[in-house]
Amino acid sequence: MNNVPAANPSTAPEDRVPRRTKIAYALGTANDTWGHWLYPNVAYPIFNIYLGLAPNLVGLALALIRLFDAVSDPFFGWLSDNTRTRFGRRRPFILIGSLLAGVGLPFLFFAPASWKGSSLFWWMLLSNGLYLPMISCFNMPYQSLGAELTPDYHERTSVMAFKSAISKLFEIANFVALPFTNLWLFRDAVSGRQNTLLGIRVYCGILGALMVLNGLLIFLKVKERYYASVAARHQEKVSLRESFYETLKCRPFRTILTVSLCFTLGTSMLGSLGYYTTVYYVAGGSTMAGNNWNGVMGLAYMLFGFLGAPALAWIGHRTGKRPAMFIALGVAIAAFGGNWFWYNPSLPWLQLVGCGVGAFASSGFAMLSASVGADIMDYDELTTGKRREGAFSACSSWINKAGNALGYFTAGMVLKFIGLDASLTGPQAPHTLFWLRVMLVSIPVVGISLGMLVLWRFTLTQEKMRGIRLELEARRGKV
Image 1 (cartoon, rainbow, N blue to C red):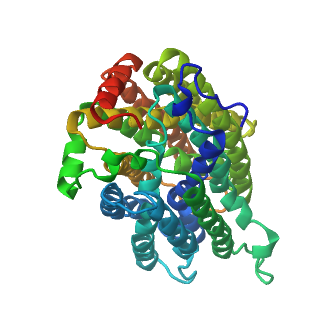
Image 2: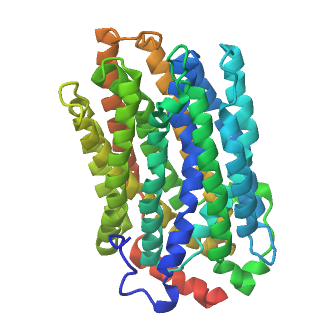
């Protein structure tokens, strides 16, 4: 991790987070990545191409399951804000949630292969209805914990740079999932067809075991800095309604939420539309070749994303977080706008360029958004007198997921509208491929451009945050 920026020289020694703590905390990104984003990343290939469920129904299911998050995320964010134990507010939920989510992950794909149509649709909804509260139990306290590790403006960026960079190591697992199902172990000896369903179950079992281990390590190695203060331990408990109503009244928070929503809406379809473009345009209709390219693109995504977080953190240390976010969004527009050229049947390796540069920008943007989020929580404490990391984390998480859900739903409708037929064993119709590529390019560029316009309204600069910290410490002491 030598390429991740160390603490800023201006950071006081007592505000610095040890590198081993940053790494231990960052392990939790695996649980978030696999528990939340593996499923939508493989849902279309598994349920549409392999099991035959119509793409619009897959997209509808992926959109509707976010309703479960709409309940479970706020609940666990509120619950961890109001929990008082000798282990802290967050860590007990992190331990229990990682155990439940790790064990439950493979069962999302235990639908019988003989099921068709509405049966598969309802399986997607019901299995996620049981599973998503488990991952919320882990993720809301985990995200809240990250905002509590340091009160320093720049050290927060360093913490989130470690988190974002390490997350790229785990995100490759989402890309490698489908190539894993291509292994000869999952090939039917009689028909010669790949048993993709069995492959994904085995794969999720392996990831689930690692999720349990990660939760245990975070529980043991990462402490709750703010909970150690008397004010946090004895803070008045907050009602569920007050928690989220007051949270959404915070203007800087609403601004960053809107920027994140624009970015997410613009990019959430890239996984689905990009996969179909690879399979049917670049690979000429070969799902096996498309799956293999998807795995290689995962490597590019990991490598460039691993560089994106520290690079944007370095810029943020020198320019401030807001200018660095503008740079990240500008790079994203260039990367995703170039997808018309990156996806090329004659030069299939060009996909790696578009995927990699997009990952670079996305990683940096996510890191900066998380660092800014911790600043917003200080602003809120100054206004309300309460620490409500759980409420802010829940709102941020749900808006991000809602944006992704709308993107998945729209992707399904787009695939249906342009006439994509997953039953074909060869190329799609020319007009289908043309509009697939148009949507792949235009949607993210429009969404990210809107996000850049909204970002102009964000006003929490480094100077303002320095003043807010001094006022808070005069009121309740240092943490």
